[in-house]
Amino acid sequence: MNKYKINTYAPNKNTWKSITITENAIKQILFLINSHSDNKGIRLGIKKSGCAGFRYTMKLIKNSELNKEKDTKEVMFFYKNILIYISSKEIPFLEGIKIDFVQNNINKVFKFHNSKLEKFCGCGESFALE
Image 1 (cartoon, helix red, strand yellow):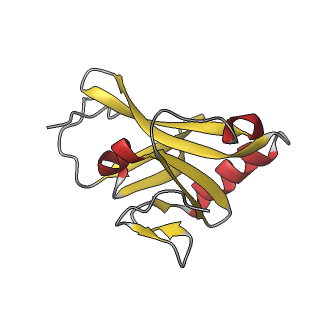
Image 2: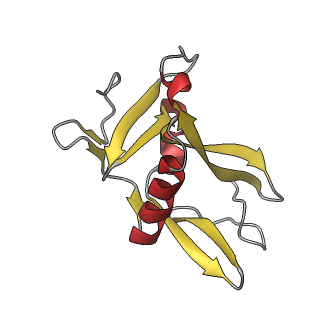
């Protein structure tokens, strides 16, 4: 199923070892994927945003998006029952992340934790790259 081989990809297990997703996050991601029959998985990435410069992104992938040609190479793998796509150029920024789904007062949100990153903004929503 993988088109591109990356040194952190484990083809025999069909998983990428450098991402951890908590049980709460797995349940919520699967709930979101299963909420519409056209949803097939998620795309993880980063984008310019926030006071520190970048933030993590997670987007649902629709069935119609799976067959489109992309300008950038992507790594595709399963984590548990979740189909995940990551742009190969963003892998260094996503290695080692832990995705959690937490309740903060009345809000429920996905939180991305990366012990390798040291510079975060005060609100903890964005990070800086060196």
